[in-house]
Image 1 (cartoon, rainbow, N blue to C red):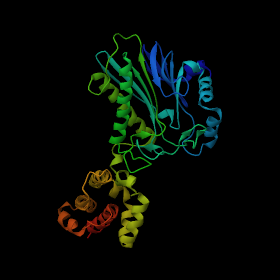
Image 2 (cartoon, rainbow, N blue to C red):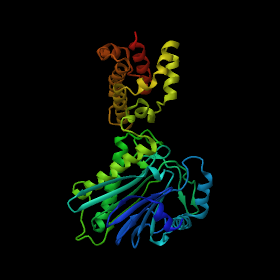
Image 3 (cartoon, rainbow, N blue to C red):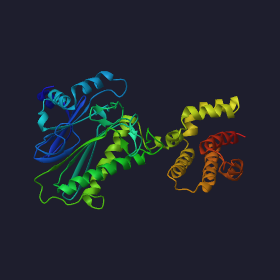
Image 4 (cartoon, helix red, strand yellow):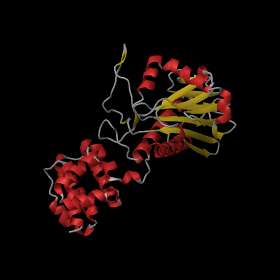
Length: 381
């Protein structure tokens, strides 16, 4: 794509004396208008660089089944592919930091924050449906002397372009990466995004990338970007806000949506299929048919969602070894009684439901399933 075509047809999302941000189709481009220091994950011109003018993000493939594009990238190698994308954009590959993702550029979101002479802009594309993971989860591939043992072919990636309006010391630049990463993980925690490799809450995806730029000529460099200082605060504000908004548009992760029973407990194996299969065997035909026809109302009911997230917190504490083994049964029993009351819409029946859910020697997941069945039976009894 000639640069002139990009200039004429692209949608300008933000323009200032410092940079412009434009989007066209599968491409998103930040053009820095003054000398900056850039730290990035780009395969070519990555790491810490001066002389980088363009920060580019693009949709490199479809999320599922796009083996043709994935094989093309693997065959070309990342450096050659970098040059190919830059040629499509009509920009100098040696002055470009590039990121790729399966996420749509139409879902890139922007957040801007200012405080006195401090300014920060974040442009984020994000998807977590096929690739969310937690640091320390089992890995899916390994790099050897002969190359990668398995190529990553995942749907989700969180790509962050962060442009700061103030200069940084080298240590503050490194610290900004930490603050940016913590903000990304905080966004995933607020949305209770599950890891797809364990039962933990995700801290990111296995293919996350970033470009972080700051100007070289904006007075005395700031010495800190930790969350304790305003520079770190505004980094956290724009990154967390942009990640949450990008996930809203790419994956439909509205905050209200995440209250659902299956969103809270699916990472422990309580999927919709498993729960309905269990309930079919525990309820009468009429009871099950009524529940199946009203799943949205039942499993997204605010009290049910609150109880499900409370149970998820207890299961996390069990997984992390926070609770003594002798206390696990009683902790689960108290919470499943609350869940049964919420399903039944009968908070006054908590003592009776608690008594009926003696599950001290039972698998916690079985107790949760039994509580849903018991609550539904009690609702119209």
